[in-house]
Amino acid sequence: DGGITQSPKYLFRKEGQNVTLSCEQNLNHDAMYWYRQDPGQGLRLIYYSQIVNDFQKGDIAEGYSVSREKKESFPLTVTSAQKNPTAFYLCASSIGLTYGMNTEAFFGQGTRLTVV
Amino acid sequence: AQSVTQPDIHITVSEGASLELRCNYSYGATPYLFWYVQSPGQGLQLLLKYFSGDTLVQGIKGFEAEFKRSQSSFNLRKPSVHWSDAAEYFCAFLTTGNQFYFGTGTSLTVIP
Image 1: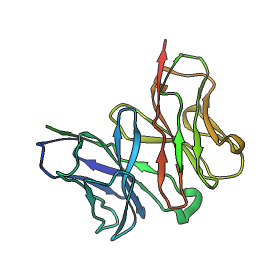
Image 2 (image 1 turned 60 degrees about the vertical axis):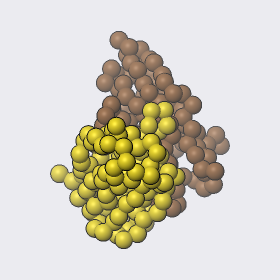
Image 3 (image 1 turned 90 degrees about the vertical axis):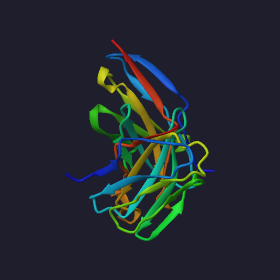
Image 4 (image 1 turned 180 degrees about the vertical axis):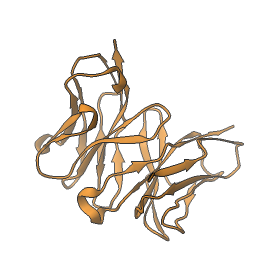
């Protein structure tokens, strides 16, 4: 089945450690996104990528880094510079705006990161 | 500034009653609009989307939404709510830069 796989579902880290969240898609989508979700704040865009080897900062990119070396993969690293990293992280993908009306975001099941 | 506003943080309805969730957007052009639903601890599922044409769009699970350009609104409706509709609902739009912007969500509780 086609879809987006995020792993792990739950992740615990000590304060000051970097941690990488995995996101893989087999939908052959060009665009991929990372969102952070906190209670009452909806989804906030961290980074997005329109194409392999290219990505742009979203609204809350500070303390995060990404790479897009393969079309199907878009890992997110939460660095020690992120002051409040405990949150629910969602990865999404879309076919790309050039496809017009077929564009919609497909989401993974999320990773809940807890930093202690 | 571009944004999505969902003015109702939480709504409670009785099972079988009608539902309307409000969404207003601020964007310089006509956006592509979406409604998504999220169950606790899960990802988001698309309910419906509007790109152009008929301003009343039908979605899955009996939901519909109406785009009103004059009011910059895209409200979600359902004529009769089921207990399984209890979830968090997000309105979103897509920019010409291919970014999806989401509202803060409306949490729906359904009472028997």
